[in-house]
Length: 296
Image (cartoon, rainbow, N blue to C red):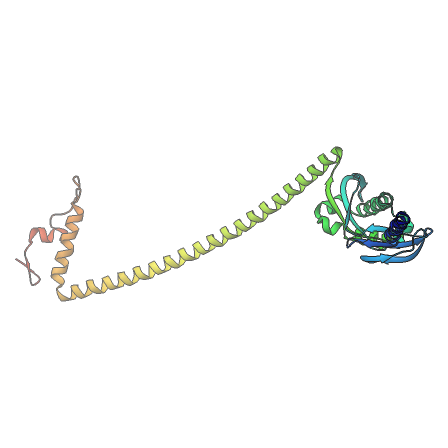
């Protein structure tokens, strides 16, 4: 009897444990869940915590709601001018509607990836197809992906119950047959810009040089005018001094000027003058002593 009672207790505990394990479930902080009854959703978007379900008839599917990364395949796209570019990108996505996600993918993440990737490829193809190569190269990659991200996010929310948080381009390459032409064009553009800058610099240099020459001529003219004015004033002052000196003693002034004339006339070794000895030039040689204006 004791053994039978122990077996009953053990069996009861096992039944309770089985019932508890199949009736209670936990949704983690990084998850959301849906409750199913024979495959039909009867409770949506179950939040984190401890929950109850009816064993056997009800099941629970949990989905990871963290941000997931999809590395897309490297693809070849045509630009507006029908030039090819090789694009390597990735997508950040997240489950936001567990019920819609379950209905579209049966909760299979690989199925979701297979549905998202063609949409991303189509969106990028359309975006690169409306831009020319120069715009693609010049624009910032973040700005380039704003439109595809917004359009794809709106579409995927409705179709799969997921949000496309971001599409990022890791690398944009050119096919070898296009790279040479692009580099040649870029080189030509840079050379053209360099020529324009050189021409502008030359023009600016000529303008500065012309202004400097004009200012030089003005300054020289002003300096010449000032010099002539000062020279005239000096000559006038010298003449006034000479006149004053001459007025004080005309005979001595005449003597002094004659002495200077003698010195300048006979300065060289071979200087020679042919003059009449009685010429007034030799006046002070004939009679060097001068006193009060009379010869002695």
